[in-house]
Image (cartoon, rainbow, N blue to C red):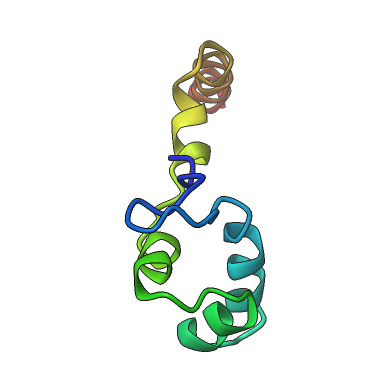
Length: 80
C-alpha cells in the first residue's frame, strides 16, 4: 500500500525514502548499497523500506474509474 511514514520500532521518518530507494535499485545498486546511500542505517528502518510492497497501482484498478476502463478494454477485444 502506502509506505509507512515512520519506522514502527524507532520512529524515524521513512516515508520519503521509498522513491529514492526504488530509483537506486533501478540503477543497478544492491539493496544494501541503496539503503546506505539514502542514509538508512538502522536495521529496523531498513526492514521498513526493504519489505514494503507497493500495491497502490494494483489497487487503482479497482476504483470506479479503473473498472470502467477495464470494461471498455474488454468490450473492445470482444468486438474484434
